[in-house]
Length: 277
Image 1 (cartoon, rainbow, N blue to C red):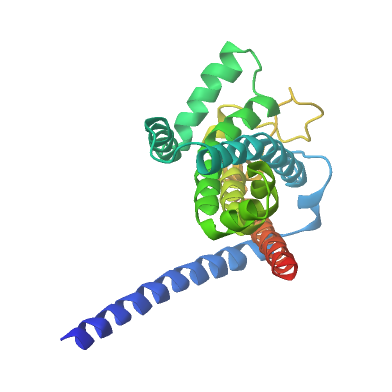
Image 2: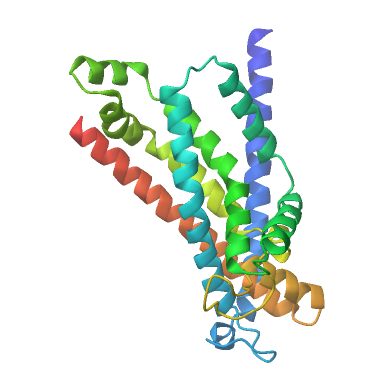
């Protein structure tokens, strides 16, 4: 009976994996088959107009807003994760409250963040539809994700690493910086990758905060359009579906490139760590 149950579980597991991989492969092939034939040089023109509907300005805006959002959220999220995992009492009520709060914030729909950003940054602070308003909204949105991923990565580091560092006379700060953080870096990068994927694919929150102007922003107070918003605008019009599908290909390639780069960095960090050990 036990062997029979194990075989059933194995079949279910492999079946679920096959369905997942099949759905992913179908999605990628469908996007590439529809989008690649619509790629043309005019889509990468420096200036956007109604004739070429260039995706280059939205691509640049996407890169800028992603870097700005990560520049705000990563230090705050990682610093909070280090405090919760290394300095705070793990069984305290404050820590449990923070964890429940971050998990709740992680499940809030992005349009709610967009409405908050519109009410607070755009309206109350009078930033208008701008890169700055969109950046701060995205930072608040991905902060819980980075915090939870960073905390779990730090908690996964064996306590023997810390004890060995303490035994050699290292202080807590030096132990965290030289021993714990390098060991937890692959998990931290995984959280950052998830955050980047959410930022790059975000639409609802940015429509309410950064706007839909398809030009390269000249400053933080200028309105901008990201790739996902650009694709939504083109498909919503119904007249540029080919260009929207081509934008989907570029967006897919961008996410794949970010994932590959992050994986390469994680492997290099892991290799250097083992060499030092």
